[in-house]
Image (cartoon, rainbow, N blue to C red):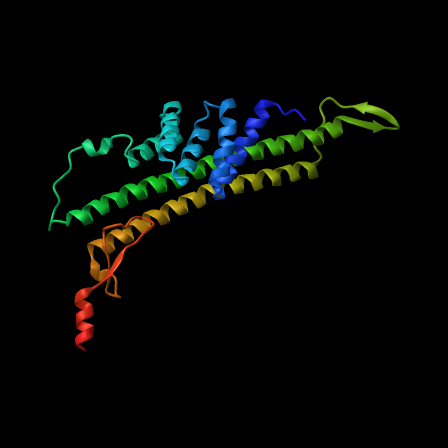
Length: 259
């Protein structure tokens, strides 16, 4: 069976995004690469491919795809997030770092802790932005699919009404109208897709908020060791948004031994 190239590319793009969202990163990369020759100027395609490569630990390939995304859509959500990703990965200079920084107030911070705090901020901003942008892209794709499905089903119902038999003879109505119950059915279907679109955005925003909240909790633990009642201190070396390194409070341990 021969498949039209455009339809094949759209199917690969949709499957690639679905695979990425379910954690099948190698399959996602395979499908997105298959769609690439037919839809090279699609920033969303390159953006998802870049993120799939990040999960596959192919940083050079990811950097290339992030740069292509930014070149195609520098002012769009995918382009802006790609720029942030490039900065986070050390592939582009951080424009914010060029701005003058006010001297810290109060007691000085240990350099190791300060470095980890900065990394946590960047990592949280990048990943939160990534979740938000992916949610927006998924919602946009869900909206498009929903509208296409409602249009297709509506046209199917109208076609059935356009050609019919009356009194045993074929009848053609050039401008049929959907019956009330059929129109209500299409309205309910449209509302279902709209709710799904809204839920995708809300879920991505919730995930972004949780990432920021997690980063703030880690920062407070690094800045205030007494925040942990178990006397197990979070240490900066190796700690990031997804990995935590702890060590026992030596003073507290000695106190316990002396009792």
